[in-house]
Length: 198
Image 1: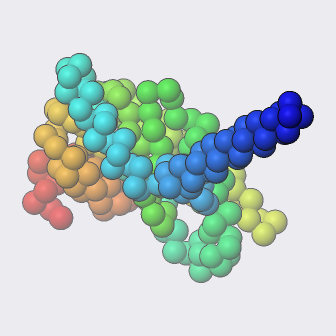
Image 2: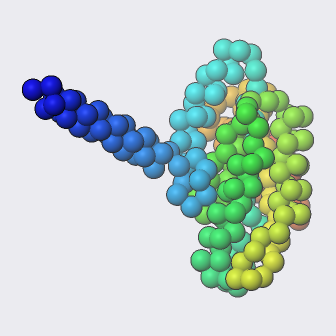
Image 3: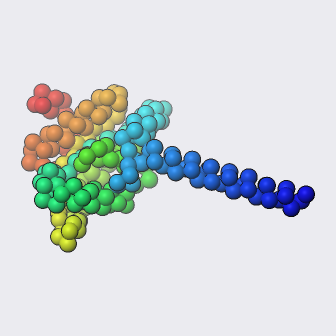
Protein backbone atom coordinates (compact mmCIF):
# COMPACT_ATOMS: atom_id res chain seq x y z
CA UNK A 1 0.00 0.00 0.00
CA UNK A 2 2.79 2.44 0.89
CA UNK A 3 4.41 1.86 -2.54
CA UNK A 4 1.18 2.77 -4.36
CA UNK A 5 0.57 5.72 -2.05
CA UNK A 6 4.09 7.00 -2.72
CA UNK A 7 3.65 6.43 -6.47
CA UNK A 8 0.32 8.30 -6.54
CA UNK A 9 1.68 11.15 -4.39
CA UNK A 10 4.74 11.49 -6.64
CA UNK A 11 2.52 11.67 -9.73
CA UNK A 12 0.21 14.21 -8.12
CA UNK A 13 3.24 16.38 -7.25
CA UNK A 14 4.51 15.99 -10.82
CA UNK A 15 1.11 17.03 -12.23
CA UNK A 16 0.99 20.06 -9.91
CA UNK A 17 4.51 21.09 -10.98
CA UNK A 18 3.58 20.71 -14.66
CA UNK A 19 0.37 22.71 -14.14
CA UNK A 20 2.34 25.49 -12.43
CA UNK A 21 4.86 25.50 -15.28
CA UNK A 22 2.05 25.68 -17.85
CA UNK A 23 0.37 28.51 -15.93
CA UNK A 24 3.66 30.42 -15.75
CA UNK A 25 4.21 29.85 -19.49
CA UNK A 26 0.67 31.06 -20.26
CA UNK A 27 1.15 34.19 -18.11
CA UNK A 28 4.38 34.97 -19.93
CA UNK A 29 2.72 34.41 -23.32
CA UNK A 30 -0.19 36.67 -22.35
CA UNK A 31 2.01 39.55 -21.18
CA UNK A 32 5.13 39.35 -23.38
CA UNK A 33 5.83 40.26 -26.99
CA UNK A 34 7.13 37.02 -28.55
CA UNK A 35 9.64 38.72 -30.87
CA UNK A 36 11.41 41.14 -28.52
CA UNK A 37 10.81 39.58 -25.10
CA UNK A 38 9.51 42.94 -23.85
CA UNK A 39 6.08 43.37 -22.28
CA UNK A 40 3.28 43.64 -24.85
CA UNK A 41 0.73 46.42 -25.35
CA UNK A 42 -1.88 44.59 -23.25
CA UNK A 43 0.50 44.56 -20.31
CA UNK A 44 1.34 48.23 -20.97
CA UNK A 45 -2.19 49.30 -20.01
CA UNK A 46 -2.17 47.07 -16.90
CA UNK A 47 1.18 48.40 -15.65
CA UNK A 48 0.28 51.99 -16.57
CA UNK A 49 -2.92 51.86 -14.48
CA UNK A 50 -1.09 50.30 -11.51
CA UNK A 51 1.78 52.80 -11.62
CA UNK A 52 -0.50 55.83 -12.04
CA UNK A 53 -2.42 54.79 -8.93
CA UNK A 54 0.80 54.32 -6.94
CA UNK A 55 2.44 57.60 -7.98
CA UNK A 56 -0.79 59.44 -7.10
CA UNK A 57 -0.74 57.92 -3.60
CA UNK A 58 2.98 58.67 -3.12
CA UNK A 59 2.92 62.15 -4.68
CA UNK A 60 5.47 61.02 -7.27
CA UNK A 61 5.76 61.28 -11.08
CA UNK A 62 5.44 58.75 -13.90
CA UNK A 63 7.09 59.42 -17.25
CA UNK A 64 6.01 57.82 -20.51
CA UNK A 65 8.88 57.59 -23.00
CA UNK A 66 7.45 56.72 -26.41
CA UNK A 67 9.75 56.01 -29.34
CA UNK A 68 9.96 54.36 -32.72
CA UNK A 69 12.64 53.48 -35.23
CA UNK A 70 13.28 56.17 -37.82
CA UNK A 71 12.63 55.14 -41.42
CA UNK A 72 12.10 51.50 -40.47
CA UNK A 73 10.18 50.90 -43.70
CA UNK A 74 13.40 51.36 -45.67
CA UNK A 75 15.07 48.70 -43.47
CA UNK A 76 12.23 46.29 -44.27
CA UNK A 77 12.42 47.19 -47.96
CA UNK A 78 16.17 46.55 -48.04
CA UNK A 79 16.43 43.43 -45.85
CA UNK A 80 12.88 42.06 -45.92
CA UNK A 81 10.64 41.47 -42.92
CA UNK A 82 12.96 38.75 -41.60
CA UNK A 83 15.79 41.28 -41.53
CA UNK A 84 13.51 43.80 -39.83
CA UNK A 85 12.59 41.18 -37.23
CA UNK A 86 16.29 40.58 -36.49
CA UNK A 87 16.70 44.28 -35.70
CA UNK A 88 13.53 44.36 -33.57
CA UNK A 89 14.68 41.28 -31.63
CA UNK A 90 18.13 42.72 -30.91
CA UNK A 91 16.69 46.12 -30.11
CA UNK A 92 14.43 44.44 -27.54
CA UNK A 93 17.50 42.85 -25.91
CA UNK A 94 19.32 46.18 -25.89
CA UNK A 95 16.36 48.02 -24.34
CA UNK A 96 15.98 45.33 -21.65
CA UNK A 97 19.64 45.77 -20.71
CA UNK A 98 19.23 49.55 -20.32
CA UNK A 99 15.96 49.85 -18.38
CA UNK A 100 16.49 50.52 -14.64
CA UNK A 101 14.61 48.88 -11.77
CA UNK A 102 12.08 51.71 -11.64
CA UNK A 103 11.21 51.23 -15.33
CA UNK A 104 9.17 48.91 -17.54
CA UNK A 105 9.77 48.40 -21.27
CA UNK A 106 7.11 47.51 -23.86
CA UNK A 107 6.76 46.87 -27.56
CA UNK A 108 3.56 48.66 -28.52
CA UNK A 109 3.49 47.12 -31.99
CA UNK A 110 5.41 47.40 -35.25
CA UNK A 111 8.50 49.50 -34.64
CA UNK A 112 7.00 51.47 -31.72
CA UNK A 113 8.25 50.97 -28.16
CA UNK A 114 7.58 52.60 -24.82
CA UNK A 115 9.14 52.81 -21.39
CA UNK A 116 7.32 53.72 -18.18
CA UNK A 117 9.69 55.28 -15.68
CA UNK A 118 8.82 56.26 -12.12
CA UNK A 119 10.54 59.63 -12.36
CA UNK A 120 9.96 63.28 -13.15
CA UNK A 121 10.81 65.16 -16.32
CA UNK A 122 14.54 65.83 -15.88
CA UNK A 123 15.43 62.22 -15.06
CA UNK A 124 13.18 60.94 -17.87
CA UNK A 125 14.87 63.19 -20.44
CA UNK A 126 18.35 62.16 -19.25
CA UNK A 127 17.41 58.48 -19.50
CA UNK A 128 15.69 58.92 -22.89
CA UNK A 129 18.79 60.62 -24.28
CA UNK A 130 20.93 57.76 -22.96
CA UNK A 131 18.65 55.28 -24.76
CA UNK A 132 18.68 57.32 -27.98
CA UNK A 133 22.47 57.72 -28.08
CA UNK A 134 23.09 54.07 -27.18
CA UNK A 135 20.82 52.87 -30.00
CA UNK A 136 22.45 55.31 -32.44
CA UNK A 137 25.94 53.93 -31.64
CA UNK A 138 24.92 50.27 -31.48
CA UNK A 139 25.67 48.11 -34.55
CA UNK A 140 22.94 45.68 -35.64
CA UNK A 141 23.97 42.75 -37.82
CA UNK A 142 21.54 41.70 -40.56
CA UNK A 143 22.39 39.29 -43.38
CA UNK A 144 26.13 39.78 -42.75
CA UNK A 145 25.71 43.56 -42.98
CA UNK A 146 26.17 46.15 -40.24
CA UNK A 147 23.07 48.31 -39.90
CA UNK A 148 22.75 51.47 -37.80
CA UNK A 149 19.38 52.81 -36.74
CA UNK A 150 18.11 55.87 -34.89
CA UNK A 151 14.97 56.50 -32.87
CA UNK A 152 12.74 59.52 -32.30
CA UNK A 153 11.42 59.94 -28.76
CA UNK A 154 8.41 61.72 -27.26
CA UNK A 155 7.91 62.18 -23.52
CA UNK A 156 5.02 63.13 -21.27
CA UNK A 157 4.83 63.05 -17.47
CA UNK A 158 1.96 62.31 -15.09
CA UNK A 159 0.68 64.30 -13.24
CA UNK A 160 2.76 67.39 -14.11
CA UNK A 161 1.78 67.41 -17.81
CA UNK A 162 -0.96 64.80 -18.17
CA UNK A 163 -3.86 64.13 -15.81
CA UNK A 164 -4.95 60.68 -16.99
CA UNK A 165 -3.84 57.65 -19.02
CA UNK A 166 -5.33 58.78 -22.35
CA UNK A 167 -3.81 62.25 -22.03
CA UNK A 168 -0.39 60.83 -21.10
CA UNK A 169 -0.28 58.62 -24.19
CA UNK A 170 -1.65 61.32 -26.50
CA UNK A 171 0.89 63.88 -25.29
CA UNK A 172 3.84 61.48 -25.66
CA UNK A 173 2.59 60.60 -29.16
CA UNK A 174 2.36 64.30 -30.10
CA UNK A 175 5.89 64.87 -28.77
CA UNK A 176 7.12 61.87 -30.80
CA UNK A 177 5.52 63.34 -33.93
CA UNK A 178 7.24 66.65 -33.17
CA UNK A 179 10.62 64.87 -32.82
CA UNK A 180 10.13 63.43 -36.30
CA UNK A 181 9.07 66.81 -37.70
CA UNK A 182 12.21 68.41 -36.27
CA UNK A 183 14.45 65.99 -38.16
CA UNK A 184 14.25 62.67 -36.28
CA UNK A 185 16.85 61.12 -33.94
CA UNK A 186 15.96 63.44 -31.07
CA UNK A 187 14.05 63.59 -27.78
CA UNK A 188 11.12 65.99 -27.32
CA UNK A 189 9.06 66.63 -24.18
CA UNK A 190 5.41 67.52 -24.76
CA UNK A 191 4.45 71.21 -24.76
CA UNK A 192 0.94 72.63 -25.21
CA UNK A 193 1.89 74.47 -28.40
CA UNK A 194 2.61 71.13 -30.14
CA UNK A 195 -1.09 70.29 -29.85
CA UNK A 196 -1.95 73.02 -32.39
CA UNK A 197 0.80 71.96 -34.82
CA UNK A 198 -0.40 68.35 -35.34
